[in-house]
Length: 238
Image 1 (cartoon, rainbow, N blue to C red):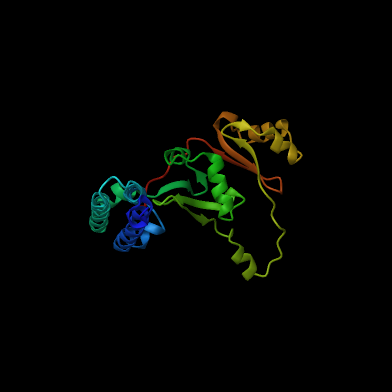
Image 2 (cartoon, rainbow, N blue to C red; image 1 turned 120 degrees about the vertical axis):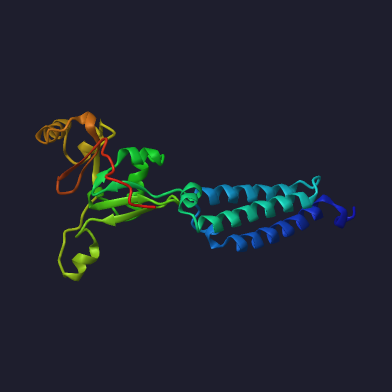
């Protein structure tokens, strides 16, 4: 069997050629393709990757066809990225716009659903960014690339306390006691509270359970309530 005429050798050569083509296309499109991906960048990246895989494995199809497809998609992406630099409307269309999830300490429920985020996913993102008490967040904004940026409330930054040489009691985890109007009785039990205690607190604030999107209790037994159907005051982001 002649190795140089075998399908294995053809695949190896196609792999090398595909990697070379993808390398130069990535150089053309810029570092953005391999770091912060917008929706448009993601679609382009998947398409180019599929074309590269197809032209590498499918030895029956002419290699030139796959190369042309990869280059064509790359060139389209390059020109669109250049155009969107000059047009705000096109940039919003292709890359999307930031979405405010928390505004002035209030959760904007409609915006959270608009970005297909459930409450548990959002709380996980908060914890991953160092916010174990959601009441410390003044603004939370989902960027066009899918990441969430946080602006803490004044005085909530640990740096402020260190600079003032204050000795502060270590905060613990906040317990989620209401999620989407459902009382989390197990979580209440873990903090030595019960349903009656929670209902009393809601009654004191004249808030109905059906109107509660999220409620948390910190390690000082302070209850934080975020009501449903809070509306954004207006979009000030591009």
